Image 1 (cartoon, rainbow, N blue to C red):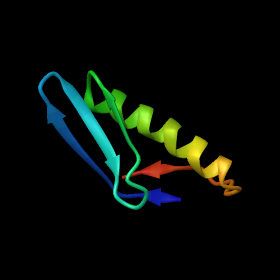
Image 2: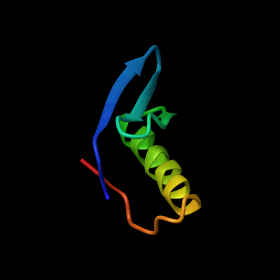
Image 3: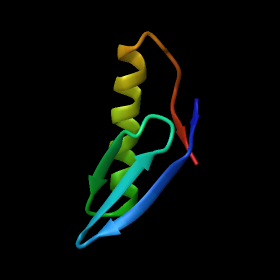
Length: 57
């Protein structure tokens, strides 16, 4: 599954948000925020019976 993500900076944290599911996560760097979001999305899709790898572009 390919996800469309928006990354923004809020004070000293980066926030990554998937536009399809509105799931968001944060991190001290943009890369960490994206990594955290990828993990959250994999858990979300696995929990809903969708077994696919998540690719963030």
